[in-house]
Image (tube, rainbow, N blue to C red; front, side, top):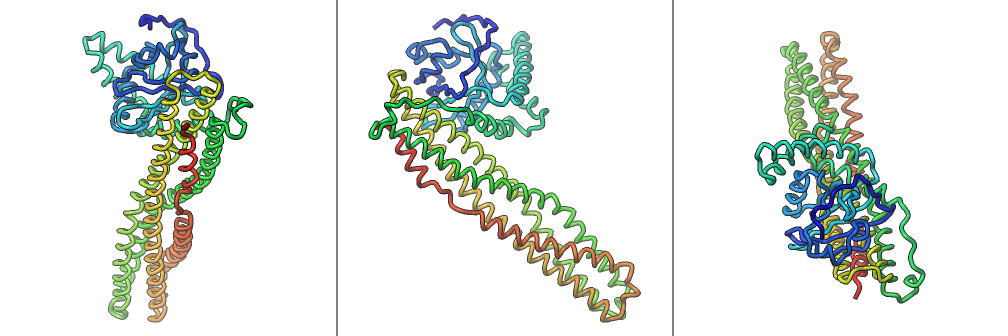
Length: 448
């Protein structure tokens, strides 16, 4: 393969709905491709296999991005990125690449057309600045690997300037958005011959269709989880002022009780009990934001893995069609096996993340129920204190302070109702992942 291809400035679009596929080993050497990847890059599949994947790297791509990609893959994590490649004729083409580890010695990259132009435009500007920084560093005598490491930090910094906490947070947002838009595009029509009953590839495609259906079932349940997470987030944001109000009302009640301690010492005891309970509520509430943050992180991970499952299933379907048409390269069956293994891994991640999310939501439900019960007790204490004021005929003496207590009692009652409804919603939504049919269909993808 030529190593001195000069960019021509021509930008080649990826056909709508097309999937580009490749596998590499841990050294970055290409071990498998599909016909579409070979065609868009302008090489024969046989020429690509055995070459380093950076043979199609565009010179304007920052080395820092690839440092970030390898760091994540070597930590057994999925990663996604907008990548510009260089074809044999000098044309460039942009893809959205999703890359995952498969087993202990392979990596699978599935690339699609760019479907989200806003995200892509933002990242292009970031890449340009990072690449310019790399050139400046190497011109000053820094080694290429050191410049790439520094450039990765430049990219992270520029991403945070766009409002993301990290590059991984950008991926968590971009990956589901890209795949959701891409998946709306029509897929190529199936050859009539392979839809006949009993055709081996037809069986594979039937399994792929079932996987799509099961993914939609999971997506609907995930949407319910995400709505719940939003509602829980709103409640979490209101917790801090709620704790402050509790403390303030207890202070008002204590102050009022001290004024009449001589004639009604029981008011002091009632206020003291309320203060103790307010502290218990505060301690319980302190655990809730952390649980909600963990639940949200798991839900975002679920969104990513669900998007990857859509992508890998589409790639397996596309590759199976290539095999049936005789357009797949010689190592096609092995590559389809890698895709199936990757899809099995993704479903396994879905299983694990789903179970963990369920456990966290049940912990959230337990915490909310505990806080709700404590708030109900606090509400009763406020009412008891109010009744004692009336019993000892101190309403006149304490009239200036009673309105605060009455308002807090009303707010607390409403919060108790809201918390109990949230508890029921959390427990009602937590269900096992309906994955049995999904696992069976993934197994059926494998061609014997």
